[in-house]
Length: 316
Figure 1 (tube, rainbow, N blue to C red):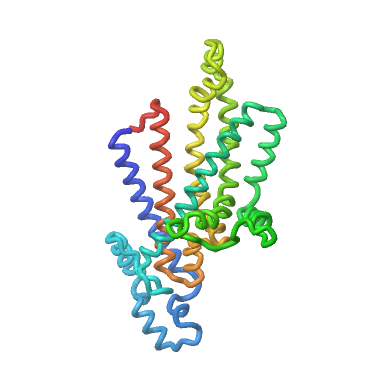
Figure 2 (figure 1 turned 30 degrees about the vertical axis):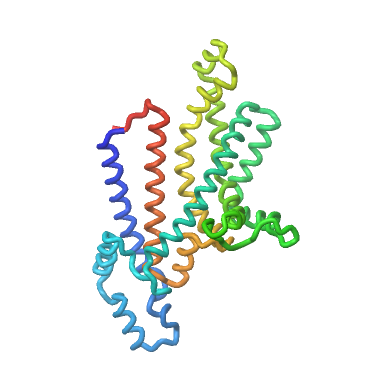
């Protein structure tokens, strides 16, 4: 991968984020409701509304408001929350950290389950195992997050069983095992769709690879089935899976919002929902921009992994 390619990718990401910042800022300007009214309530007098509108700079031209916000971003200042009065940057960074932990654990769980499941289905193609995996993955893909979360809550968090807490969050640094206990259900819910997507992809790619000439040649050379599978077939079958994992990051960002709200998990998705409900414009703008940046960086990371695993791929 050449330095020129990396420079172009970073430039593309920066341009994309610039456009996203304009779109997000524009959307927050046309949201129904007024931030000053949301702060003061419906009983505020016109004089009070005018004073808060002037203090927040909402009476300035839109382009001037955008430039003031964007120039602050360039200096690492995401503004001040209209709801809490606290700086948005540290609050969003803390929430993003919790969401990334949730996403990371979901991806690890997905890889641990999905790859063996896909391999098993491919090796037993057409059999009962393959059929069972296919039905299970169809269900996993088809069920919306709120349905999966509801089923998880019914079977694993019902008060009669008391297996896992239904809501809440405990930092791992405060109490590691209790923190994992609280993370279990959100992680399981998010990973269901990921497991279904990736296992189907692994199964499909591996079935194709096992019929290629170089795999047949390896059999003729007398190599063991396990060695052929691990050293030759699986490596090539997993390459397209990396792209799927990167695309699933987009799902993670969208799905995590729903999951965090259902399980009252204080991640960036829940912060964004609360900000939208309160018309907290700086928090909405920061949250949306951070999620867009996360998605762009995840795609770049996928390309880097792709090139690292397959030396034939040369980005120039």
